[in-house]
Image (cartoon, rainbow, N blue to C red; front, side, top):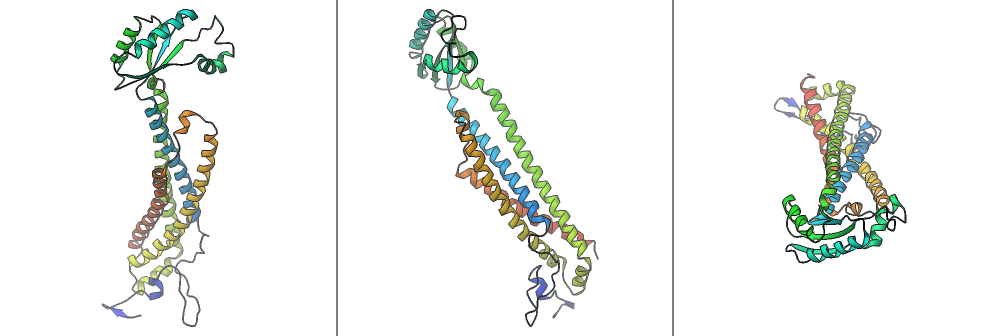
Length: 317
């Protein structure tokens, strides 16, 4: 040890980190905070927290992608229903409405939904003979795409025009059908964000408790280091480095476990082959955002450990 400004500096073997490098003759020095790697709670706590935050983040991103894909798919989409009990009259009105729609300005495309598709839609509820049953008439449907916004006034005017040739016509914007679904998706996105924030706070609390425990267990050693001239910043750096290494191991393990779980869930949902689910796939930008989760978790652990140690050391002596 050497003098510097009237005080003794922290020994080199302590300034290098929390774990001793070795004495002359090859003998290992005692650790400032004795702890075998991965034996403490920090790696396991970080692994669990990072895994849960990554899965929650992936769920939120998938829901966002689903909502965006559905909004694009339904943009400008309307459905014209021809509600008429008599099959011949229903068919006549559907043809007349389709011909008129194709002449209306602002209509980009319009087509009549085939009867077999309508029968397939109602088959789970009404059975295979629903389309032929006279007492259960299925409305004729026309799928159309309009340019511009679907304002209620515009839809009302279009319905008024169609009823001149098809009295049983009723115009609905396709996006209105899924408005409750979009609301539920938005709520689930906020829920996933709230879950991530709560898990981040829980991670910080776990690191805080671990740092306080380590300080309490090594109070005598820290006081000796203070007498040798070690500063609070040097001591805090030792704890910060140790917790950062443990947190990194835990964050990597938790992230890999979450990625495996996400791929398993993705395969399960892809088997549904539903249109609204197909747009939920995660892209490269989504994975880049998820990669920030373990990085931020390690930074939170490091900053929490440093703040906890520095605050405790100020009141120790």
